[in-house]
Length: 167
Image (cartoon, rainbow, N blue to C red; front, side, top):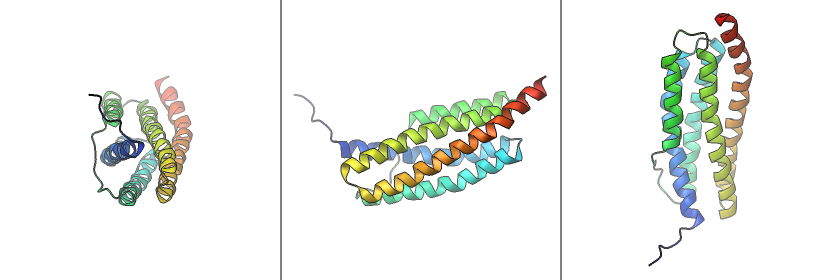
């Protein structure tokens, strides 16, 4: 007997749980990244993004409410792997001129993952007719995009400093 096909709304809910878990894990990682950063601007960027991430978790809770589900997390192996790479950078490059460059790269990997997930969730919310959820997901996607751009700007000086100090 063939399994019953699962509908898009079930996949939407499943990915919502996945990104909810991811955001909670990111909240734990950001203070560690801020503490490890040597550049005051990079420290501030991580601290600012932690505050934004708290708001993103709240928005996700609202999306769960809009679809009539309780906010629940589902282990996200992808974010665990990305965060583990960031942890390795902090350990392997502590006291290295390349540390901040590595932190920027690690943070951008997180942002790109989030941007992909929020873009997909927004598209599915549109398809499923969850107009209010679309607005909430779009607000988070816009924040993640701004954070990625800010990290790109911080990456230039971090990369230059890593090269200059190594020479």
